[in-house]
Image 1 (cartoon, rainbow, N blue to C red):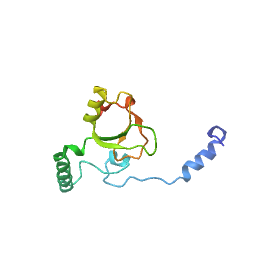
Image 2: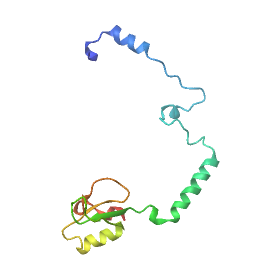
Image 3: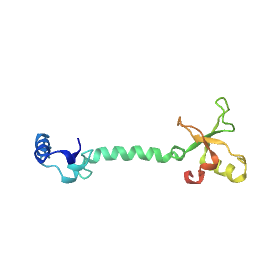
Image 4: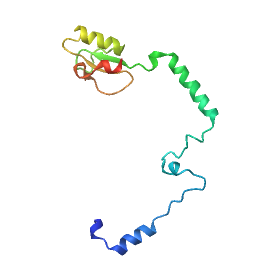
Amino acid sequence: MEVYEETFEGISFKIKSQAKVLIPEGTNDDDALDMFASSLDDEKKAPNEKKAEGTDQKKDDPMEDEVSWEFKWEDKEDAEIHGPHSSKEMLEWQESGFFENGVLARKVGTDSSFSSSRRIDFELYT
C-alpha cells in the first residue's frame, strides 16, 4: 500500500506507535545527529597523543603511503605476475614506451582484476 492510499488516521497511528528517541541530557545537538556520537571538542588529550605518535611512525616510512603495482603481460590465469613496482616506476615505463602494447596492472594487496595500463593514470599516484 502506498502512502497516498492510506488514511490520515492510519498514518497518525503509525507515527504515534513508533518509539520516541530521546536525546540524553548534556548531549550537544551536533552529537545527537552524529552517527558515531562523539564530540571532538570533549575528547581527552591522552588518546589524541597516542594517535599522534602512531601517525608519526607512519610518516617515517614514505613507502607506506605509496601505492605499489603489479602487472602481467598477458590476460591469462597462469601468466607471470611482475612486481611490486612503485607508481613512479610504472609511470616512467609507460612514458618511455616500455608498455608499448599495454600491460594488465593492479594495485598490490588487492584481489581485484587486472586493468589495462592504458586506462590507469599512474601520475595520480606519484
